[in-house]
Image 1 (cartoon, rainbow over the protein chains, first blue to last red):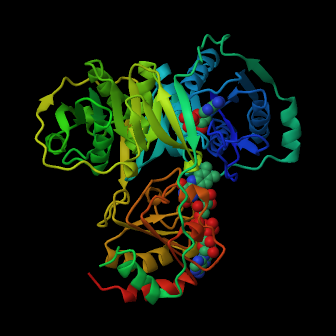
Image 2 (cartoon, chains in turn yellow, brown):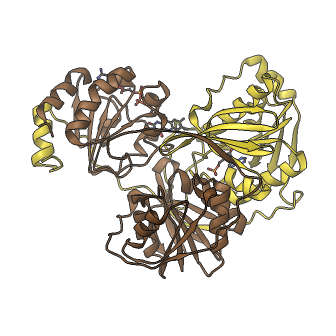
Image 3 (spheres, rainbow over the protein chains, first blue to last red):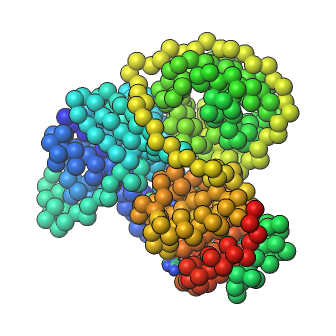
Length: 250
Length: 313
Ligand SMILES: Cc1cc2nc3c(=O)[nH]c(=O)nc-3n(C[C@H](O)[C@H](O)[C@H](O)COP(=O)(O)OP(=O)(O)OC[C@H]3O[C@@H](n4cnc5c(N)ncnc54)[C@H](O)[C@@H]3O)c2cc1C
Ligand SMILES: Nc1ncnc2c1ncn2[C@@H]1O[C@H](COP(=O)(O)O)[C@@H](O)[C@H]1O
């Protein structure tokens, strides 16, 4: 069984981004880039399924600029077997990424596509669901536990009121939540090995996908700053202020 | 015409729907609400009473009892062609699960978690954990939107829209099948929409401490309880308590952060609260930069004192 894992190269989660002075976007020059944290979890889960003998091959795919190769190498170092870069220079919206991933899935015929639930840059939370729709496959988003056996995946998903268990007939799409697993660190020997693993480059036209944007960004702005920093000395002062100044307590 | 996918528990309509209706009303055009469920006449009636709703579409079938994304999307797609320009859902777990499927099937973009409507085709949405807000215009013929509830007031009640039964889309054959649910039971207000929220972080040290220290305070304030991801990861509380970029977004009148450092991913979920109180022993903790009232000290001393200083309800 083959697993396809789409991964995105994003601004590292520890970086506090700045909006460009002209409001055209966010400044990503000279900023640390990493694999989207949810996608690390997706790669880890796929590799564990392989280690458990459920999967036979893990293929990582990333859509974007040439530098996504680095991110793909990280996936290979965690344990993916090979990688595909769908190289595209402009900004890719979730729908375009979903079409590219669906096209790669048609070519590769995996039994599972495991994605992150959300990219922490666009915070869209769309691609997995869109891939499932485009392929007409069942989906389990926000997974916190995955078991695969007998042509089925059983997934615990995080819902607003707690947890829900769903069964999916394979092939299917799963998106990861934070608690699914804790990704391993790539060891130096594995990082070296990853350099020799195959990395293929495709392009949107070759996959027959039109990636032209549907949205135009008119401006990007910082949120209004919150003026915090107020301190109180003790509980009595806190309660008094909440009552008399903030008026949030009776 | 605008279609809002209702959030409900079959018997009644959830407040997330009221917030989404307010956003929908700003798009221009009559607002219809789709209630897809099973034995959901109560929810349909609830939707009909939301002010500003022109019509309720009610699809009722056993396979919509624990609706999957596949079946809900199919139901939305079944009614969508009747002239809707916008398909809207609250950005809840359900809305996030379903709407991208709808958008992909229609070959249109989705605009996620809008926080403002500029015009019928232009919306504001947060990116990078709310550290920036993008104004985006959609060129698609149908706009698929999810709505961040905290950014729009709840629509009032008092409406009396007609309820129309609509044909049920057949159950999707290759879809997920729900086989179980473990829902967190609580007598407290729901986290999203509560007037007061108290959240605990890693500083609490254990689930036992969390319950012992935060529950009595929550009782006195009739508050909902939340948590940081670290507290959830450490197993102090269930996952549905998580507030933040990848958890729930809340904006109560009063948010009390206890033993939470204030990572940007946590702030993303609560910094629009009206009044923020932070209790932390580290005076340098970033949470203090956004708190209106910071109290530096040991939570194990402060919390019992704070609870004692408030009248029992
Ligand atoms: C992709 C991604 C998504 C994430 N999404 C979220 C999210 O949605 N929500 C979220 O919360 N986090 C999220 N995080 C995690 C986030 O980065 C932080 O790790 C997390 O918020 C830290 O939780 P915390 O403040 O409870 O723990 P810590 O950062 O460990 O802080 C504990 C605090 O408790 C204080 N403390 C300790 N003992 C006491 C005491 N006795 N009295 C008073 N104070 C005390 C300490 O001074 C410290 O400030 C995400 C991370 C990633 C990578
Ligand atoms: N450019 C991309 N290349 C590969 N995978 C992506 C890309 N963008 C998003 N994804 C996948 O889709 C998930 C959800 O992204 P989003 O819908 O943009 O929040 C991510 O966690 C990735 O698994």
